[in-house]
Image 1 (cartoon, rainbow, N blue to C red):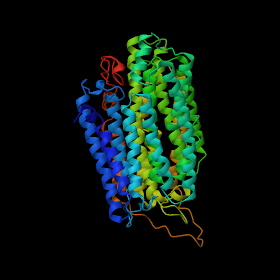
Image 2: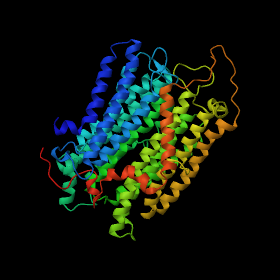
Image 3: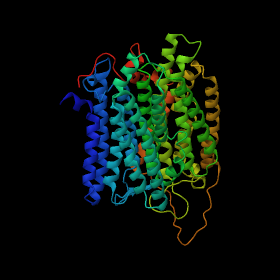
Image 4: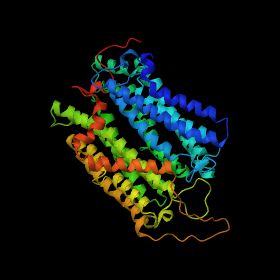
Amino acid sequence: MTDLLSLILPELILGGAALLLLFMGIGKSVATRKSAAAIALLALIAAFVAAARHASALHGGATLADRYDAIRLYEFGQYFKLLVCAVGILLVLLAWPSSSDAQGNPSLRFGTEASEFLGLMLLSLTGILLTASANDMVLLFLAIELVSLPTYIMVAISRPTAVAQEAAIKYFFIGAMAAAVMLFGFSYLYGTTGTTSLYAFAQMIKENGAIGALNSWQMLAVMAVLLGLTYKIAAFPMHFYAGDVYQGAATPVTAFLAFVPKTAGFVAIIKILFAITAGTWIAPTQIVNLLWIIAALTMTIGNVLGLLQFNIKRLLAYSSIAHSGYMLVGLTALLYAHYAPSLHSSQVANVQNDALRGVLFYLAAYGIANVAAFGVLSLLPAAGAQSPGSSAETLDDVAGTGRSHPILGLTMAVACFSLIGLPLTVGFFGKLFLIVPAWKAQLGGLVIITVINAAISAGYYLRIVGTMFLRPAATVIPSASATSQPPRRAPLAIAVSITLAVLAVLALGIIFPTTQALSHLASRSTALEGSTANALLSTAATPDH
């Protein structure tokens, strides 16, 4: 096997399995649909093993990446490959076709398109792996779009309702606009440098002595790219689609949307910031101030609008917006540390390292808690008449379910407590790892806004838990079209997914309650050996190709 094939082996596994599943869509038998889920699961496990083996080879400085200019893979990328494959396994289990005809499960109804649906899921996950490896603007753009394009179709076919089709159309057109804006920015970055290589761009910044300064065209380009990427992470000002899309999609697809595009967006943002700062994280003050404003507005808008929601999926959509704001606090601290007046140079490097680790760790903390929350919703039936593939969405739907289904109620409580950031959950350390570097970077105002927003979020998360345990079940008035909604027995795959997610939330919050143990998950991703420059790009050698 050549070095390049070894380098992108996880992508080849997922991409090959996705193509196989798409071809299998020709067959419409029940056996074919059932085997599709098993193939998707095995592909993710194989990709995880391949990424883990390569991560062991990379640790300690060994790398094959320097031979290829378009693809450069360091421990930063390996961290995301492992994270995405792990969470991807949980997401595939949530979408497992458990019905007798293998056309869906209690909360998802893709009909005879099971193979196509799971193939699209793997294609989207493949896009994140490519995003983590990309060192070229063209490849980075294509990888990000590979993440997004399958999700448009997944939303449309996730359940046979008009609201799902409407959500898919909105999602597609807004996504097309965001892609155009992002591509516009990349074109100007190319036009001002004559290269699409992020490595070469960083080298030009370094050799020209322009660290911390961009010309006006480059500044316009970076802002356009960041604007396009705010759509991927559902951050202000491109956040407004989230409520409608999350509500319209089937619950397992909503769980997918809440994690996968967001992860790809943050990977891309970090790569762009690294390139324009030549690995020093010294960005123009305009960029730093822009991130400060976006972070504050994103988490405030998300949490305030979350308080106004009665549909839980819309509530979790605005919650997702708020969590993007929290992670942007970490990126702001990463860039602002250089400008903190009372920090020495050695302290600046430590704060930058901690801030980057905090963002990477928070993505993992959010991803597993997100799976647990949506997994519980997928098992609870909606009140009254509903189309196939529907699950609980409103507060009335979950009223009293904590008493009738105590395990599901406790599971939702654990997920909500983690999303709030309460102690003994992974979410507590996730927020701690973002707030501490921001405070050390002397971003006191932003830290105060973050803490206030975390308190605001408790209002709607605890409302979900309180409704499940304290409110009586809602009385549904029968109608001619209404159908009885007996309690659902959890399919094995969904039960396994939720159980693994909850165990991870508690294990990382209770069994390993120390900063050193928790940050180890993300510390290797920064590949710190005296400089953060080793995290994404090499400064040791010029690529051969």
